[in-house]
Every structure is written in structure tokens, then in C-alpha cells.
Length: 325
Image 1 (spheres, rainbow, N blue to C red):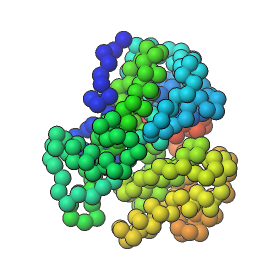
Image 2: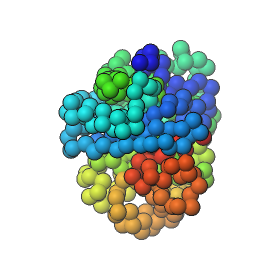
Image 3: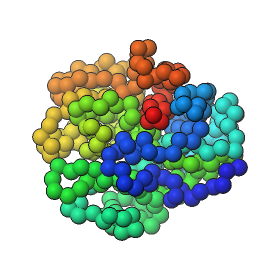
Image 4: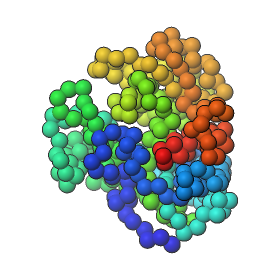
């Protein structure tokens, strides 16, 4: 069994990287990745060249996992462990490091502006903890935190901070450890999925997972805004207007701050109802609306075995594959 490193030594802590996508690209690349969602567990074994050697998906019954930043996530511990064991067994995973992609509600992400920001993490981390302590639904001492700097629209610097409750993250780490694996990298599914975006003008991402909605705005690899909210209905039932109402505040903030319009909207997680969302979003934003994850057979980015992952709807895993280089 590989020697277990502490979570604080592993999560997204890449000093000196000034762009979000380079930050993601710079993470270590274990031979396995595991994405845990409210309704399934997927495990992918990667080749040294970054392609897919094998993968497995195990469904979870409703209520077995309830993603939360605060409360217990894994409700049916034995049931989830059994599903994890079956999926890992199908890709022959044993005594290895893995990349662990967590449900979005577990990881909070903030984009904050600073006129001045410390040059070293020893000074930066306490400052970020102090700034964020009133924005979190849990004690700041019970957290793991990392950050990256990026360009700002004004004097100073913008800082992207990821923060999670350590007790919650340990639930997922203990899950992979219970089947003989070790979480070498931990991140959120949406951060991994952002690699699906083709660099262009300002892009708004609306990613739905059950009742959870992640909204992000990216331009040229820079994260301008990020929100994770709860929808009034499940993704397969939510109305286009309800989804629009949830994403609009972030879009309006971006457009007012940067004086640019949204050029593309990417939607994921609404099943075969995608076409219902195209018209309303095109009408409001006057831009193209696309699925975040496409299975176009001409898409060369899905080579090396990636197309079956896309066809299975594994956007986080496909994004992780693309960010592997």
C-alpha cells in the first residue's frame, strides 16, 4: 500500500501558477481517477500516454450519498463501499494512488480581489482564512484550503480559493482507503470538467447534478466567477426559466464588471431535455448555447478511448483526461 500523505499536502496546492487551467494541468497524474457522485461511482485507469485503458461505472441508489459541505455525505457506508469495491475490481485497482473527484457541494470556491496579496503561502493562508470565515457554514479551523492568483479587472490581484471541510473530505478519503487505495489528488468534479471548454471568449457553464447547480464563467483560462447553489427541482425536472434565474446573477455581475457579454453558454446535466434550454438562453444572452460534454465522433480530443467516457456522461472524467495533456 502506498504511503498515505495528508490531505493538506495534496489538494490543489501548486504555488507560482497564475492561470486556473495551468493550475489544474499542473496537478500530479495518478494512474487511476475516481469520480464520486450522488448517483454513481466511476473509476478510470489511464495509460502512461493519458488515454483510457479501462473504466467502470457502478450506480448508487438514491440517498446513499447526499453531497454537502457541512453534514455527513456517505449515508450508506457499506453500500457505497461495496459499489466502490466492484468498480475498482473491474479495472484491477489495488495498492495505488488515485485522483479523487468530489461532488461540487463539498468544495467551496471563491474569487476575491486584493489590492495587495502576500507572496508566500505562510502569510497568504491565514489571510484567506480570515477573509472567508464569515462566508462559510462551518468552522474555519476545520478546513483545508488552497489558492491561485490570476489577473484582475483593476489594480491588485484576484485570488481563486478552494476550501473544504476536512471532516467531510475525510469521508471520501476513508472510502478509497477502505478498498486499498490512496487519494493522491483531491479536487471537485466541476473543476475537472472545466478542461472541456475550448479557449475562446467569455463562457458561462451551467453544470447540474441532481439538485446542485454549479455556475462558472471562464475567459482565456481565467475563472471570473463561481457559484454552487441548490435548484428548486432536480436537473431532469428543472425548467429552463428556473435554471436561467439561478445563473443570471453571476452573468450580470461579470458583464457589469468587465463590460463584456457572454459569448457561449455550456449546459450539462439536463439529460435529453437540452434542446428546451437552447431557445431561452439564446434569447437572453444573444449567444451560442452548447452541451458541455459532446460525443461528436470527429472530436479528436476524445481519442485514446475517451469517447466511451463521454457517451456514459462522465464529464468530470473526460475533463480530467483532457487536462492530463
